[in-house]
Image (cartoon, rainbow, N blue to C red; front, side, top):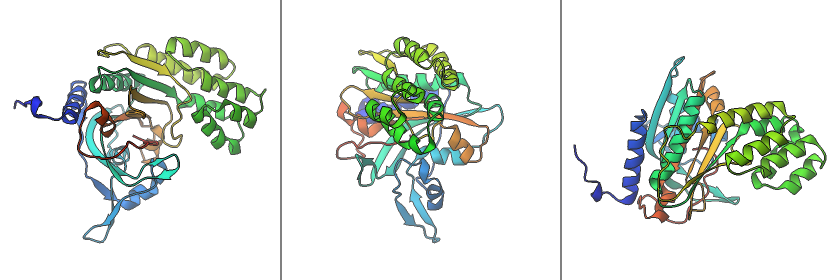
Length: 332
């Protein structure tokens, strides 16, 4: 069947382009219901970016919830087989009440296109997903400057293991805010922990500049170096076979202060930005801890989502949302 793409709106063309990209790379389309039992989301509330869940009572008396997160539903229903990698993509809406700057927002329907790689995920799979994230940014905004920020939460976790447990939440907040003064006060100016955390905040930029600086500043923190070496291996081969073409360049940055939910993510995390849009239009990472929580012990997973509503300033009219963009919080 031939499709006249000239009849599609900008957002529809972008969605079609992303779907075709993922299909070409061997990912199968995944469809799901718009709602599940409320208890499922309530029991896993700590994995959700917003604690608010939109509910209704079904005709059989069960309390149901409109889906606030795609990944939770996919992992819940996944059938993980030893040695097998499942590659899927989706085009779905989620229903959230985002919070921004501590304020509670109203419920919104947020269109997402994304993918998940589950099961026997190795470094090659991680590279492929990062490559597809970069290509996705190029597809939806090839004429604008684009940035893909990459971090490894294993480095942060290794450093935080040296700090007092009671201080860790505040230190995580300081790292996320790049607040060197406060994290130095919390740790003590001359401690190794303070030195390492200052490196995570300060040693950011292009991989060829940031990675040598991080290796130097974390030289005597063995567990952190091991994770850093994995990040370097993956990034060194990221461009193999990928098409990052476009009228404007795509920049790859290492930023280990890019903190995500440590209950959700465990390894490499990343966010994509487009010039002119003040929030990440793409986010994702590895979430092995969620796999274990859902009963898939030993299974691995990585994925990302593209927030199609945030692309509206580029001329994409998804028709799904009105009003200014709000923060996405954690999760994808």
